[in-house]
Length: 176
Image (cartoon, rainbow, N blue to C red):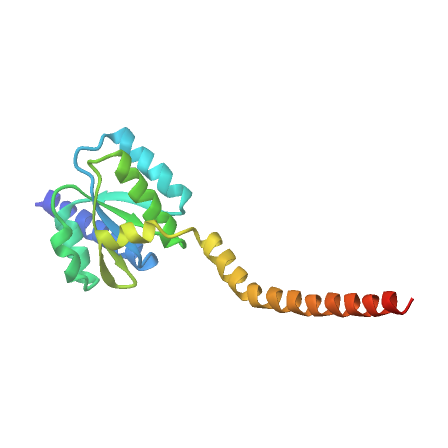
């Protein structure tokens, strides 16, 4: 009897801890990891750590209870077999890239679904996000796009001044 209470208490604490993790990281990706070795999972965790993300494995029954608590019933069909969760850091794109690149090299890792800001996202959408350039590249493109008209305007004004100087020089040369 005492052991049953201890098991129930342990499950409740696991559920509370996982709910707290999800509340701290509203963006996460659900994967199927069946067939991956421990070394491969550790390699995945290391690659996700570089993207400020984490990866953990959870029992399906516990994950279904967590999804019910978080009102994420759309993601319940993705909970089959061995399920791993990748909690995204600040840069969601780098997390998607790390998972998609790992899945290319290790066919046994399957991305099943994701939740971004409370909405379910398909695996195909995650692969599209992984093809986007990094945050720094996107910011550089935006700054370049903003700077481009200004640079063009300065070049046009410079061209007018150069032509004016050439005309004045030609007039000077003609008079002498």
